[in-house]
Image (cartoon, rainbow, N blue to C red; front, side, top):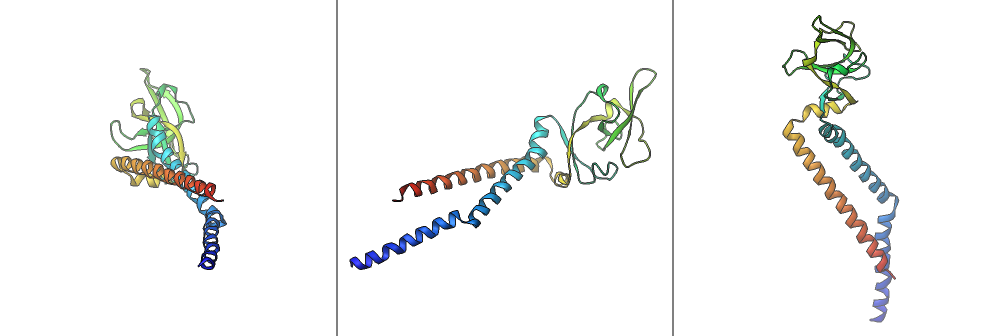
Amino acid sequence: MNGATAAAAPARGRRRTSKNEEKTGMLWWAGQIFSWLLLLTVLAIAAVMIVIPRVGGATAYTVLTGSMAPGMPPGSLAVVRPVDPATLRTGDVITYQLKSGAPAVVTHRVVGVGSTLDGELRFTARGDANTANDLPVRSEQIRGSLWYQLPWLGHVNSVLTGPQRQWLTFAAVTGLLGYSAFMAISALRDRLERTKKP
């Protein structure tokens, strides 16, 4: 009976070593690195698309045409924040309503600033890829100036509606916090197991 016990002990030791090797091998570390990179990528996308614009009072738009190519190709995400029209200068990129009060907007570069006889500001805008200027833009049409833009993320922005953004934000935050807690607990459990070993 003692011999059987002695023979079984090394087998358990080998299984424990094998389990530890699985948690410290190349594939295990690759999985850990990939998981954290994925986590950070999702956080970054959620931040630039939802969190930062909301905190900064900005609005995210999707570039639908090539009028601002190559700098802002179709599918780009353009984050625009409110601005005092009087501070706009030639070279600034603005988002403005095609008709005052209408929902349709366009994002083009200011190529000229002027005023009417009564002192009302008028802006001339044109897409970087266009050869003709847009119709004159009044101050009340301007929704804001470009804060930052990112390629490709406009496609994601186009798919999401207001309620979907809120649910996505909630799901992303909950999922990421849960994943972080799981990783922390797993690391703590592994550390405790290592300290218990003779």
